Amino acid sequence: MSADTIVPGPRNLITDVAGLSVGNAADARLKSGVTVLLGDAPMVAGVHVMGGAPGTRETDLLAPDKMVPAVDALVLSGGSAFGLDAAGGVVSELRTLGRGFAVGDARVPIVPAAILFDLLNGGDKAWTDTPYPALGRAAMQAADLDFALGTCGAGAGATVAGLKGGLGSASLRLPSGITVGALVAVNAVGGVTMGAGPHFWAAPFEVGAEFGGLGPAREQLPMTPFQVKRLGEATTIGIVATDATLDKAQATRFATAAHDGLARAIVPAHTPHDGDLVFGVATGLHPLPERGALALGHAAALCTSRAIARAVYLAHPEPGDLLPCWSTRFGSHGGAQ
Image (cartoon, rainbow, N blue to C red; front, side, top):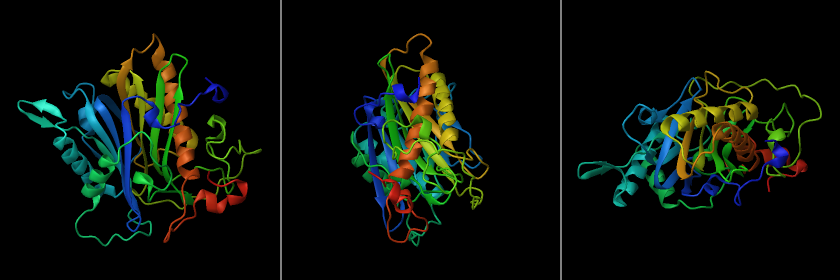
């Protein structure tokens, strides 16, 4: 499958995978936010971590040998460890809907979460009561098929080397009819563009002009030195999803393959300072074709690369930013559409 044969879904969002919706909530003063992926029904899920500084909730449940068979929602949040509280807000909302894993007469919503560090990005962090449960509830309530990208949700306060980061998404349809999508909050130590120029590392995988249509740089540009964040200050967290039928082990392998796309779009990736993590989810609407796992993993990597570039390309400036966004720095090259 090459980039010129990729056919995105109608939205070019992870919600092209039937049975999923996404909600964002953010506080511009705080420069942080939350993104929730909600399943119409419980979803089979796996996870793979490749960064050296992850922050997570309930990821142990996703191991193939653990009892819980599916999750109700997944949360991506800013706020470092404080952001893990966002999942509590989502759990509360799901409980009101009667959702959750049945334990006798009780139902317990299963909501794994991952966080990124955005506590030193210029936002007002002088709060005493954590704002993240309320942001989680608001994101859950906003869940829909269409949602914003760039400076929003879990990507509201994200940064990469030299630029603002953000929230990105992309999708594609396989020849088998199966759909794959990715949703990524990009807050990396590494760079998403080549050197000091506007060209994205993910350019070979771009579809149309979804992140500017600049193509690859004509020659390898020297990479600028990175202002390295301290341990735990960065992380790219994401979700890949499909409407194929997967078990937990296959969902874990699906998530693992997506990390290839992360490494193609961020240089360097998976550093000791990043907590890079990808969830893999399956809604199970279509059987997985024989040998379909290979195409599924490749598609996960392609969508992840494209989603990362779109996150940075679509970021927009806000008061108090410590770094420029792509469209401000490289506006003469087309800017964000």
